[in-house]
Length: 439
Image (cartoon, rainbow, N blue to C red):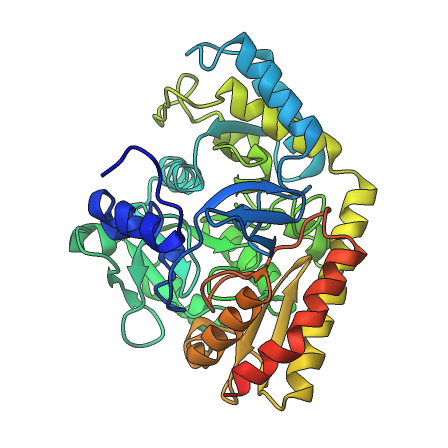
């Protein structure tokens, strides 16, 4: 094939499939759940992306969250360019690493210390290892429908009953590893209490998304996170709050701030971050109590290392993003999210499409179907949504120049660059998409 890139998305996808499994480097990008050909993005600016065919779309994916300020923010790009000019990677400490962690510590009361890693998967994997090292226990509890990266022990699917030893959720995951993870329904205090009763003194940690955003947006029920905190503390287990998606996006202090402002302050033992703290480049972190974090090597016996951890170029992007994410930026995010989620609901109501719009801070998503219209509290209910209706809605929006997440099980992301004009254009596209969803 010619070294010159093909001009169309179809040609690019065919070329990619010849050398990349499925033609993509992360599965949801393949449009498998909505059908059609993925758009190959060549550039992005503010609230807009441009594909290989030169067509522009308003973006509601935002790189799955990191583009908090909008794509290619000039000051973030400048910070990256300056850092790159000094060197791409050193394999040695830099002062910027401590500066980024200081930004995290200042925003999140639960974090006394943190370590930078490269991906959210690495952060949650490290948090689990820390919890086991701190407690001397092996078992971990997760909630059905919560995604914590693709490490073996966290790709577990729910077994039968309220809580059983899990079966592998992916080929290549040994049953013995999956069996160390217990899966329980989300927002179900009795199920969680039952699993602790069934395995006394054996559970190292409960890991939970601060607000679920990988089965659609499903916030914790009022009092549920406090219940998890109290139970884990009583049973000698750690609470790990996964804020890879919600951290510094749901609110300036993550979803923990949302909970606190609603009268439910919860202090987990460990918190994981990603997405926003890298500003679009690969940075993640695990943080929490100083005594637990100090178990990491070289001060403690729990080993973790990474050649590119704290990469200076990625850290520069994260620092610039967090420092620019001021009150005005968060006010814009909140306004855009509230306006757009309400407009989606109105358009679907007017087209008589059964649905529910659910929010968690500035994140939201839409569930289609009469079986979910009364609300989605857990993964079992989320699975009952009308995914084909979402697919029709997705493509109708795409045809009008609005790029939504290519899956019914993902959150929608606005940015600080989604101004009134951009939101207005999205709102104008909604009636036709709602009629398409109605079929």
